[in-house]
Each structure stands twice: as structure tokens, then as C-alpha cells.
Length: 318
Image (tube, rainbow, N blue to C red; front, top):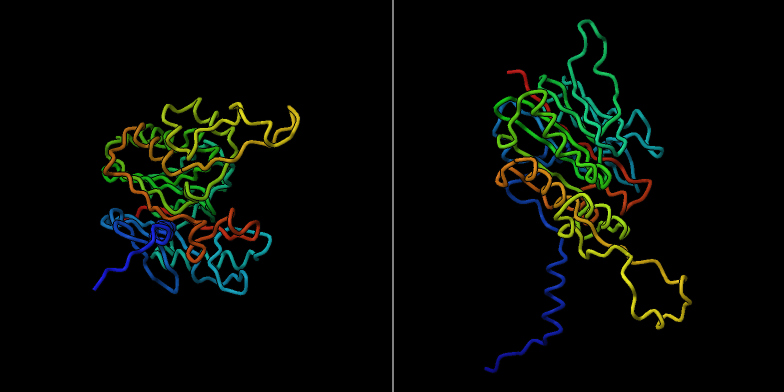
């Protein structure tokens, strides 16, 4: 029986479709269902009985977005404060951390790192809300948290000193080396050795979807020797166009340069390696918030009515 030939065009199309399929949750990551919620966790962190951590998803919750219940964990104009507080309560309960003190930050896209101390004796509430984009602590039952809707949430753990950190890394924080500086702060405050640290980089917008202005190529290249590896095209927007005459526009009226795509996860992984972490101790989820609207919120994908994810970490008192 003669074999049926498949046209190169059809093979190419199938290959592109397979390549475009969003990545599934795979080892060493797992989706844990608890209390009607689905929480992403890193297997390497779960082996420590004294550690609590989790990356939220949009599943469950009492907020409503586009006619569906969602777990929005950040205050927003389209959602009520009561809903967000109830969602946070459910999230903490699902993690077994309902009695912990949640310590979020007023995030400002900076390199500000906040050491979190236990509240003073007799204080009726937890630590005051502080402005910054990373927090560190070695105090049990303080649930450090960062909110994201595309930026990279990063958790750091020192298993020897039992210190932890939560980091929010957008492009501004990444340019300012916030995760690298957080590693330094863990060393300064708790004596953590970079080689002992474990890092989990959670769901964020991927290099497949994160378009930025070509001027960021110049800004990153001036700070990092390997910055060209983080962009799909290392264009600065200042390259001459030898075919200007084809668009029939006079000099000085050329169209703006095309955007480029930036891989924030790759950039932060590079910083962690530069800070002294071992390659085997850095874990990237590979999940893109823009590609997986079924699981995550994405400001780039959904606009101002996007919800907020919450990434948390804390020490248990054993």
C-alpha cells in the first residue's frame, strides 16, 4: 500500500501549533487543590515541614469577574474590599496559615527591600504596611506576600538559617537588580550564604508575550553584559533603516521602531546566578500569565479589570 505523503506546509503548521501550546504544570511544580482553591507549589519547598509557601491562581474565591467567581487577592476598583479580605482569608486557610499574619507591601516598582520584624509586644495588629518590592524575615508566622499580574514573583529560602524572602520583579525592579540585592540583604541580616539558597520564580508574563519598547535594550545592556540574551531581538531603535524610501515618508517622520520582547524570568535567573546561587537551586515555573488566562490574571491580557495574584512564604513555628 503506497504511503501517503504529507505536505511540508501541513507539517510546518502542526509544528507551529504544537510549539504555541501553553506549557502545562509539570514537575518539580504541582497544583494543589485545597478549600476549593488551586495553589501552585514547588516540590523542593514542600519537603521542608517548617515552611509555608504558595502561588495563587484565579480559581475559586468570592469575587466576580466576567460573570465567573475568581480569587482576586488585590484591592481594585472593580472589586469590594470585603471580597478581597475574604479571598485572602480563604487563601491563607487553604495553605494552613490562617493564624499567620499576612505582610503585604505597597509595591512601587523599586529596589526597596523591607526586613520584617515581629510586632511589638502588646500590639493589636501586625507590622505596618511598608513601601517596597521585597521583604525578608527569619521570624515564624509572618506570611510575606507580593502581588502580581504579569511581573515575576520570586521566593527565596535559606534552609540552613531558616530565613525567607518574597520579591516582586517587574522590568524596573529587574533593571535595579532587586533580586540580587535581596540575596545580599539575606546575607547581611541573617548570614545566609548564596550557595545555600533556593529560589522559585513563579508564573509571570513570558518572553513569548512581554512586548516592551526597544529603548529598554539600551537600558539593560548598559547594566548587564548578557542582556542581549533576554530579548528576542537586541534592537535599540537607533539602527539606520537603509530602505526608508520604501515607506514614502520624509526624513524625521519615520514610523517608531517595533517593540521587542523581554524575558524577565531569564533576566532574574541570570541575576540569581551572578549573586552566587547554584544553578540546580533555581526553579522556573515556565508558566506565562498571558498564555494561561484559565489559571492566572494578566494585566497585559485583561487590562485594568485584571485581578491580582498573591505569592506568599512563611516559617512555621515547630
